[in-house]
Image (cartoon, rainbow, N blue to C red; front, side, top):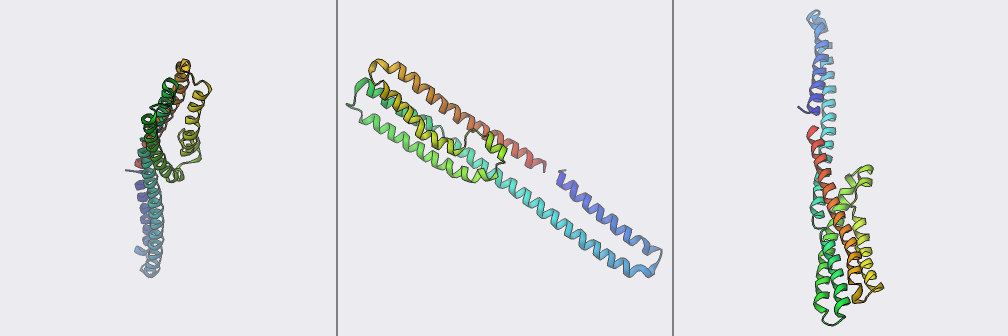
Amino acid sequence: MTRGDVALLALIGTGLFVAGAVWRPVFGDYAKLKDALECTSFVATALAAMVAIYTLNLWKTQFRHAESFKALKELKDAATSLHAFRGYLLAVQARCMFLMQYGREQSEAIHEDEEAARQRWLTALQAYNRAWSTAVVFLTPEEEAAFRGPAPIFTRRSIDDPLKIVMAYANAPGVENVHQFAATARLITDEARHLYADTVSQLEWMLREKYQVASSK
């Protein structure tokens, strides 16, 4: 039995007690029957109003929890495609390494691979931004502040991280710098991988918590 059921039973029990207190004198004095009926009618009306208010508030709470859970689940589902970000960064890295080793000749195929990876990332980012705009409404300020993967972070990093990789290539374009460039790029792509993993993990944990809260209502 949930806390809501207990509260409703307590409310009904209180109403029955009050009704009994009203009718109690009737059995000692039948002249008070009319007054008792009027009092009982008042108690019944008041009790019905209290039950209606309680039920409405309970429904609103349950509805908000249901909508919150649904929005958060959609955000988590969208987040599972965010691995495309690291795929895009790896494609940028691959193009830069190709240029370092072979120059611009025969680089058309590698450029097409990068563009395809970029399009996959933009599709994933758009879906995540759309889901985030709904889910953030249901997050508390504390939850939002503690969350590592809000959509604006991915939007900003989708511009900054590829630029960092390209700049690492531009600052040392020679083939002798391939290993140094690869190490720098690996740090950037590893950060993207950790951000993705943390984002999905946090969303799964938040979903679990909200389900437990909803189940206890």
